[in-house]
Amino acid sequence: MLEILEEAIIDSVKLLPFLFITYLIMEYIEHKTSKKSKEIIKKSGKFGPVLGSILGIFPQCGFSVSATNLYAGRVITLGTLIAVYLSTSDEMLPIFISETVPVSTILKILGVKLGIGMIAGGMIDLALRTKNKGKQEEKIVDLCEKEHCHCEHGIIKSAFKHTLHIFIFILIVTLLINMMIYFIGEETIARFLQSSPVLGPVIAGMIGLIPNCAASVLLTQLYLENVITVATMISGLLVGAGVGLAVLFKINKGMKENLKVTGLLYAIGVLSGIIIQVIGVTF
Image (cartoon, rainbow, N blue to C red):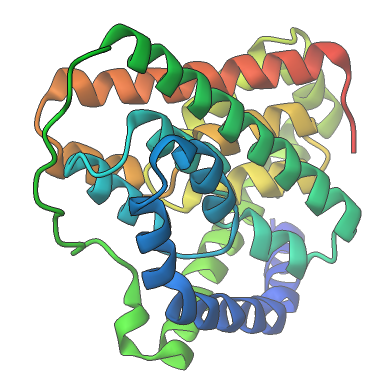
């Protein structure tokens, strides 16, 4: 147990400087682009899913929350919201950078999420336009964003807070994974998750529904430890929308609608993971 604890602490501490630098850059990007991103997506119209996917893929800590608020105010479409949720990677990117994952691998994974976001969002909007032809949904006022991250405290302080929070998550997750691997065995866990092309993505999708960064940290670490496949990880990361879903349930009227959005997101993420698993995509 002491060896497991020591290994988890050493592995996590090694990431600290890389995490801080990465979050510092992310906070800078957030400060410079958040208002522009919001304005772009407001004016996106039929191109909402395309622009939403592109903007969602960039590391902006509160973009899924911004998109949720815009959807609740009926400023953007359901397809655009789903596209943002699907492309948002939460903590995957900083962890990958900290772990020096090859740039080509990162770009391929981001590209898959981007493509799925665009296609799924576009199909949803097309289906809704066909169904609601002639009807026009009234836009309501945009809602305030109380669930935004700590960006208002300045980029250095915010980056430090974010680094500390994620470091604690990584330490706990790494410790749990190391214990799980030690007692059960990496091969046994991998065989269980890979015994069916459906099982891994289904479980990962459930993890992705956790409305905070713990989900993406867990899935990314499991992938880096070779416990789950890239298809399983992508499945969970597609479903994971940071705190976006939590904010949706808080501010958007209509529980049925919110449950439908969640179910749709989960189904797309799991189905995409199963397809990637079946065709044998590896990075």
